[in-house]
Length: 129
Image (cartoon, rainbow, N blue to C red; front, side, top):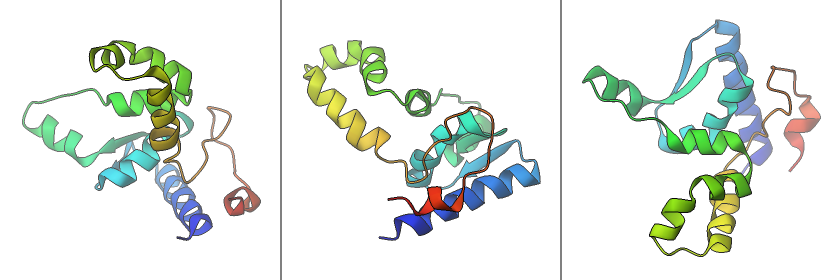
């Protein structure tokens, strides 16, 4: 409802984690993890879901494939990486691509930085819709 406010909150959260020198920013809610996980490429800490910690505490580990794909930020590359699953489930590749763009890459309130090294985003970047 307040996209500029949400972008500002996320930037402030990422910057605070960076300033604090954390190793990992842990998202408690899946929706927060989905929105934040690709930012891992731009910041000097990991972004993980709380369930990764719970799983590791009982000896379980599963790679975060969603995060790996989202970091790619390229719908065609993501569809190519998932080709076997798309074929296995008889999904039309163009439909899969549209879902990736809309559901996965579109779920990114705060834009990723273009450069993998952290740089300051201007306040005007936050207010852009």
